[in-house]
Image 1 (cartoon, rainbow, N blue to C red):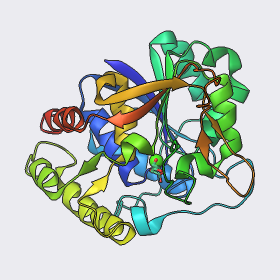
Image 2: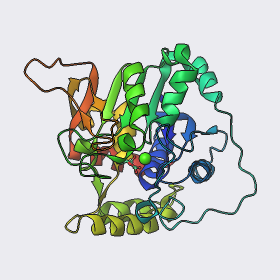
Image 3: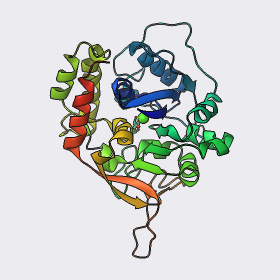
Length: 309
Ligand code: BDR
Ligand code: CA
């Protein structure tokens, strides 16, 4: 299986991506770095630990990451989309203790898995940028980096221009884009089209040996309602982060262009992602998913979610 160290901020779509990865025999999650974003760092950490427990994999290390961006102390969480605690209406069992691992575990994991390791980031870029600052030599060993973020020549979601992850800490995003190698970005251009509908959720919820089956309906009911408010005509809702995780094993769920991407850090267009499309602009090394192959995406998801863990 493909080994993944996941940086995330669960969050409904992060949670679905985690569930998918935990059920999928083609993926092995070796650690989860949980940071601020959709919810606080503490909540993201608790959510990641809860999902691992449900999957019967409590030994996978959960590593608390950043609790704020480097640019400004201003953080906005998104309970109206992801729920008060981040997994829709789901309430976590009360626990007085969650086992977590220190940040340096990231270094140990990279040293252990070397070029077999893929890093996926479905949250703000702060923690991943920090890993580059702390472990520059180790980061060179990683096979590749998969980032959910940006929107190229298309509308944003958190502002008219910007997508939430690249908007959250654009300085860190640029730092990652500058220092990482073998980068794949799955921006809104693809993830906005990765929608699930009631019909698909019904199918998954009936599969009782899926350890997450009991929570899927309430989660999606909540998520669909939130998205209906944002875009009245929408059917279902997009599961952004799932696309990014899926790309590691099934790159053919999308079509790509190769350019070097950057993000605006200044206030007015903060988080706007762009590439140089001028005739003399140089194509680059970053693989940017520009179109989703929906049929392949949904088939892959169904095949996986209907499997037993
Ligand atoms: C991204 O922002 C987050 O709120 C979602 O979890 C996803 O990673 C979409 O813009
Ligand atoms: Ca996310």
